[in-house]
Length: 533
Image 1 (cartoon, one colour):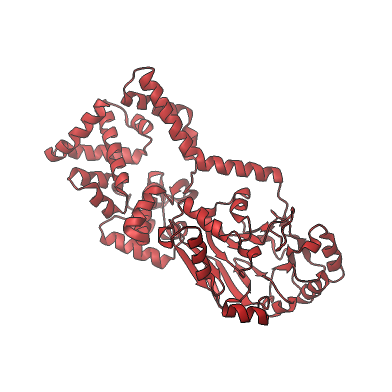
Image 2 (cartoon, helix red, strand yellow):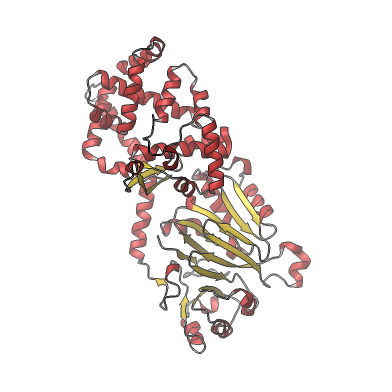
């Protein structure tokens, strides 16, 4: 996916019908960042098919409300959506206390948030790295007047930013007293985002022409030019012959096109934007709707046709297999679709397969985080991702895992070492050394349950929730019951919506059950219960 800058809000401190307040979404190697957070970012993200949960970090220039007014709502929105990934915020001195006050005034306690906030107080000319993006903050004169210093002290600080991405360099002016403040920072700049709320177009045009900046985006447009952006173009025409872009809300810039002597603006269709929004909401809500529909179907089968639950469920599963099988590859909230190496790569055949992987399992992950904290949750996700990839015929590398989880390789290797010390086999390409993966960790969970280990203890060992352990046991019992009815493996897979690998692992485990009376005694009540239903 090409790197893009999306103008969420191109206006200034004066609200207008045409422009929202300052905010920009920056997509870098499929990761999402925000530059400033003016109102109404929380809604605008959805409008542009962006998920608030995907935001990795916010970079704040200063604390005037036209740059941060939506921050409190964005933090609340992520909490309500059960965000689990940490959210980083970079801002001037005082940012931490202001955010704590925002949360307090919203009746949100920091330790009750579903995610952790990592707030960084920036310093001038220091560089902060997020994945392949580097942001260097520089101080501007916007809040340096005596009245600000007298009343607010060191918290009166405003910044611009130099942002380096893969193959491009961008400067975000923030708010300025003079364009000349940017002189030390625009060398080798591909794109300059310059505000037009405090300047005449001519002085900005003279500066960018002298600096020989190839692409200029004029944004943060003051009330004087809101309805007449052509006056800005006329002023620039006297001095500047580069790629001048007057920002409009919703505009996209293709950062991968810098340096190719053509405009980097991407024209966006309003109609297609509406369609994307509809698709986003339907994807987020579809699981709840499907669950309601399934329950309605089961109620009809049992009440109107007097069928037992077990048979009603079989009919439902068969109908799903025949009628809605294509939707099984749908990516739900918390999941990603990606290409990874095929299991055939273990035998030397380089091939890619498409897999759907669960990054965030919602409430189940929330339970794990509350018990095991962030590190335990991360290790549980590692086990889940490795297993899901293998179930779909893929095999992950450490680099895949680090990218999916948004962590450094050093952190990942510490987690992998901890998991190995706990006795977990790791089905990574570089650790299997050409041998096929062993048994499913889900089968190992059921084996511990058969041994009489309590679900809570099993859950701790595998960094899962007790509810997840119970679900695997229920699936195992379903497989055993269907197998005892001489149901073929492919039909068991269809009826239970389970991967073939897991069904086969459960059947192998059942062979061990036949030779262990204690396991048989543990399993018998479960089979009787499913018969009764």
